[in-house]
Image (cartoon, rainbow, N blue to C red):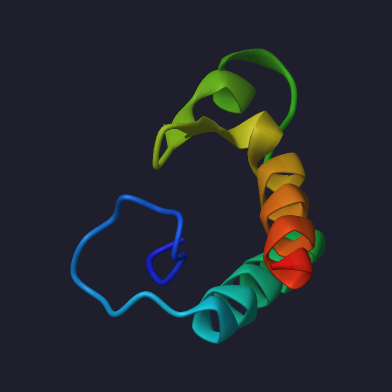
Length: 68
């Protein structure tokens, strides 16, 4: 997310390769310990994305970056 060339986060250099590494690592960690999808906890946001939607967001960004 921080290195994503299409992202608006500031503080790091934008790099497709680094973004793919970061999204891949986030996917690994979420697969090991998934965010809740139900109730209030699933609606809480991380970087503006509801926890229940983070996996879908990450998968979409990985696919999109791989095509660029």
